[in-house]
Length: 310
Ligand SMILES: Nc1ncnc2c1ncn2[C@@H]1O[C@H](COP(=O)(O)OP(=O)(O)OP(=O)(O)O)[C@@H](O)[C@H]1O
Image 1 (cartoon, rainbow, N blue to C red):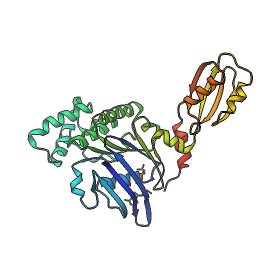
Image 2 (cartoon, rainbow, N blue to C red; image 1 turned 90 degrees about the horizontal axis):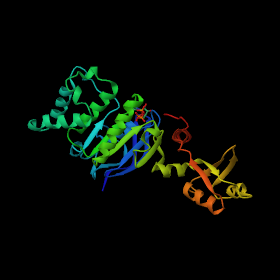
Image 3 (cartoon, rainbow, N blue to C red; image 1 turned 135 degrees about the vertical axis):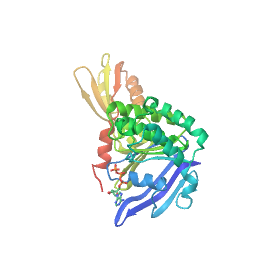
Image 4 (cartoon, protein in one colour; image 1 turned 45 degrees about the vertical axis):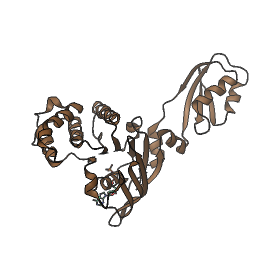
C-alpha cells in the first residue's frame, strides 16, 4: 500500500488556484522529491498532507486513511517540518524538544531517552543546553528535524529543509536525510533546487503553477525532456569514415571533432550511453577514453519551468 496517495488535488485560495489537479503516489520507504519554483504550490500540497489545510477537490490518503475525513487518525504517523522555524528562540534545545515531546504526548518516563536519541541522530548532543537563538541556521534545521522525529513517524513531510543553508550545512542535512531513508522512513521533501535532491530521491515531481509538468525517476524525467547528453570520446586510431558512421547511430544529434577528442551529443531516450559505447566498438573504434558529461539538472529545471511562478 502507498504511504501517500494523492489523486487530482485542487486547492484554491479565494480566486487563486494554487494546486490544479496533481496526483502523487509514494510507496513505503521511498523518497519523493517535490521540485518547483517559488509559489508553484509545494507548501500548499504539503499542508494538505499534514492535515493543516482543507482541499477543494480530489482525494488524499496517508497510509490508506482519507486526510479530510480522519485528520486526527493520521497525525501520529506524520512528521511535518514547515519552511519556517517557529518562534521558540528563548528555549534551549533540550527545552524545545521537551516541549514538543509533551505536545506529542510521549510518556514522561520515555522522553529523556528519546530526546537523547534524536539529538544524537541529528548530531546536536553538544548543543543540548544552548539557547535555540544561538544555534546556526544549519543547526536550527537539524533541531527542527529532531523535533519531527520525536514520535517516530513513518512519513516525513519536509518543506525546503535545506533552504538558506551554506553548502556545508546542506551536505549535513542531506547526509541526515540519507540516514532517515536507510531507517525506512517514507519522505516527501520539497526544494526549488533540483540537483540538491537528485541522488537522494527515487521519484521526482516537478510542479509549476500548480500543475505537475514531469514526474518519475530522474532518468525518466530526462527522457521526458529528451535532454541531450554530451559524451566525450577519444579513439586510439580512427578507421576510415568512422565519424560519419557514428553520426548515423540513432539518437546521435551531432559529432564535433575537437583537437584530441570528439564530442557526441546524444538523445538518451533513443540510445543509451552504454549502447553508444557498444556501437562505436562494433564500428571498429578502439576506445581510449569515454566520458559522459554529468546530467545538467539546472538546464532541465529551467527548461521545464521557464522560470514561471503564480
Ligand atoms: N494563505 C494563502 N492565502 C492566499 N494565497 C496563498 C496562501 N498561501 C499560498 N498562497 C499562494 O498560493 C500559491 C502557491 O503557494 P505555495 O506556498 O504553495 O508555493 P510553494 O511552491 O511552496 O512556494 P515557496 O517555495 O515560495 O514556498 C502562491 O501563489 C502563493 O502566493
